[in-house]
Amino acid sequence: MTIHSVPPLTDAASVALLRRLVEALGETHVRTAADDLALHLREERGLYHGSAIAVVRPGSTAEVAQVVRECAAAGVPLVAQGGNTGLVGGGVPYGGVVLSLARLNRVREVDELNATMVVEGGCVLAEVQRAAAEAGLLFPLSLPSEGSCRIGGNLATNAGGTAVLRYGNARELVLGLEVVLADGRIWNGLTALRKDNTGYDLKHLFMGSEGTLGIITAAVLKLFPAQRSRTTAFVGLRSAADALNLFGRLRAAAGEQLTAFEFIGRFGLELVLKHHAAAMRPLAGDHVAYALIDLASPDPEADLAGTFETVLGAAIEDGLVEDATIAASDAQRLALWDLRERLSDTQRLEGGSIKHDVAVPVSRVAEFIDEASRDCEAAMPGVRVCAFGHFGDGNIHFNLSQPVAMEKAAFLASWEMFNRIVHDIVQKMHGSISAEHGIGLIKRDELPHYKDPVALDLMHTLKAALDPRNILNPGKVLALGENLPASLPGGTPPRRIP
Ligand code: ZN
Image (tube, rainbow, N blue to C red; front, top):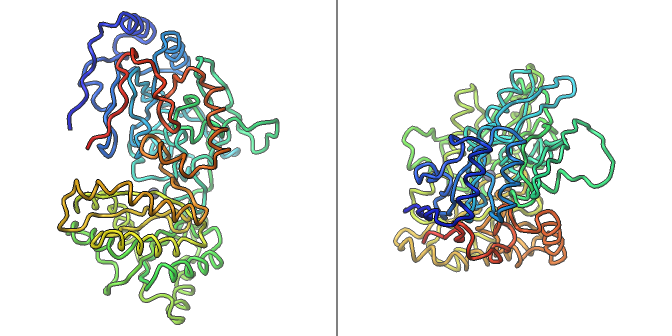
């Protein structure tokens, strides 16, 4: 992969803008060298590379606002980046300036009795979790990239992850926000209230907007009692439908102690075992479907293994579960989760993959897996379905690995065909074509096919009202980037890497 070279700074307007940014932030925090830009132009999966004239690193909300004001005055767009770990190309710069939030990384306050914390947008998610734990509390958002993703990005993209079943996705974990608007004003909405019924709930505009409506510089997060006991089970089943039935039984028996119910199809587990010699084979036999299930409780004495034994024992007797194991130690628990966490990366080792991140009502998730698998296998014999994910949220990562003997490029050329097959089924089931990864670039042109036209029209209305000059992350979520002036500094649309 080649990195798009930085355009020479001959354009007088961009030279003047850079000079003003250096005056505002200092030379150290305005970088234009190709080496400094490289990490900000690439995208997690290597599908796109963008272009930019500079990456700037403001150290305070006031400095973020100043950068936005300078860019707006010069008519130069900017994209805010946290850890740049998104999976849909939402953070790829479209010319202009990359605004890195990395230096806004303070935990401003933890209020134990209110069960809230105030953090800046550039805090790494793992640091947020750690700060909550140090106060004896839990911030439950948990993602594979938590060691490098930053909370501002998590909120701007309304991230999901593995704790949604019990705690909800990112937007449900927020009480207040501080946001820099497209005109450089700062909205101080950092309220720590459980009840505030004073009109439109503005914070929800910015969460999930992927940086197109404002830049989240700080947030008031909800905290929960720490989990003091936790047990994991790994279950083998003969179908996704049986997994759904088991999910219903566990939810009824365990209530909010049920914190994760993840699905892994047979092909996914086979892949992990094939490519990772150290991976533990969880069950002796081979099954069509697997479930990875967590029970957790703030009560250190809670008999979680007992709940598992009761429910799984009855399910085995009823022929619903073929085999099951309950982790006997923390090490075993982590080894079971390790199988799940390696899934995404492992798929890379099997050639081309076409990925879908979809949601349907939980009651239809098994039907979705079966129907989409059948239709994709019929459309391309030999295609290998790697379905896994957050079954208890109705969210499946429905990924396809190329047939063994096929050329990778030929397989990837069928991206559109598979999108249509999978997303049409999703629509028929009143689902969503993006459950947790967002729209960004990769699904931007797919969105108008499936989003309610009135909803899409309202989204355009909001974008035009809050960012009339299309300064903030242009070309993402909604197709507006094409309206940018051709003379924009570094203003080439992000390119899809073949
Ligand atoms: Zn996921």
